[in-house]
Image 1 (spheres, rainbow, N blue to C red):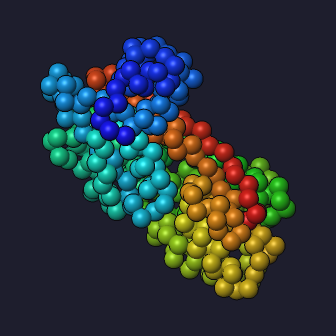
Image 2 (cartoon, rainbow, N blue to C red; image 1 turned 90 degrees about the vertical axis):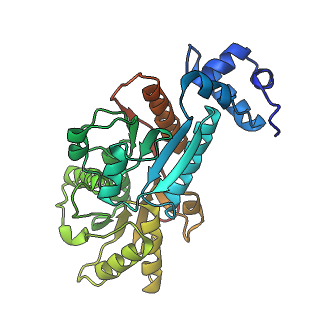
Length: 333
């Protein structure tokens, strides 16, 4: 689509007024969720981009946002970045994407606004952020945190109910008659919020079922990679009483678990059920297709971009914004 597309074409496609299109794109005024969805669909279909040059002259802002995620090689973060890119573009913004490697010092630097001065604001998805240190130091750059929350920072935080989602995943396995449920994703490093919140939900489900938590079935892992999971599952299968199910805190880990189970000539879910977390595109194409928790990634992206733009405009609301999730049941369980 060429650059001639303007408000009029978007308004005609969506069946609304040009003023409504402007309000939706800028996030101002009043409109229904159905109207917002129609306008955003028309924006994406037509490839509409607002006139950023005029806005920059008027506001003095660059229109450049930064998304920082732990790894772009992880499918979940790559998919989430794609959703944020679309949301930013719909608001006429450029989104830079950076990988922190999950290093606490890199995450803290970004949380403190130590980035390119052209960046108007940062969406940070941390793995090991010391947000108590970040809160003490403060930040001059608008910041939105994306992902799990443990401590409080005076900025918006966009997440899902990780504890509830993990509880639902374990409850699903319990309902399938599994009683020795291993969990992959426990980490012993400081500030490991993903591990803490999801392990809490897993343990809640076990407690409600009257099953004692056994840390032997929750081996610590260094990272949420396929190789880490495969190595952990091999150790679990060597136990005198191996697990009959494995709940993985990331789909990438579930892929590693499936690989290790196949190596032993065991069947999924006959001998051992496997459940993941993230519902990346590849989850539907594993062998067998993977049961997994599906965060609402488009909603996460929409909430994060809108919250960051509000901050940039001076509307600071340090709320926790909760996107939805659901358990997608496939053949692995």
